[in-house]
Length: 84
Image (tube, rainbow, N blue to C red; front, side, top):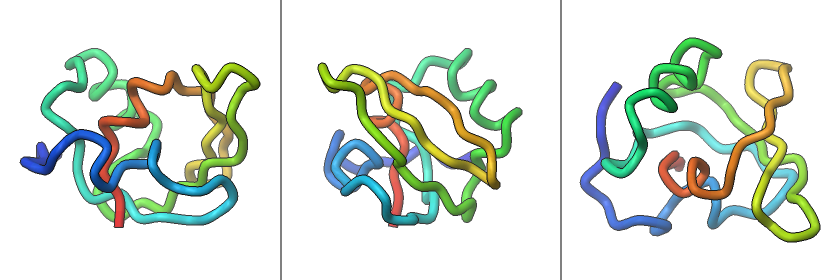
């Protein structure tokens, strides 16, 4: 998977509105290898459509939908998933 050279939070899932679909472009340099590997295992790859469904009250965790499956991800991870 391609690592982006864009600035953090410039065009990431974290900066997008809840409820809309976006296409994964690449991952940020700050994403730990273990998280990158797990995201790839569950199908978050370049070109995959993802949607942020909801964020927690404190804004630290988010629910996202990928290929019809819902996952909970930390805010820091969403900030490393670049979309278009």
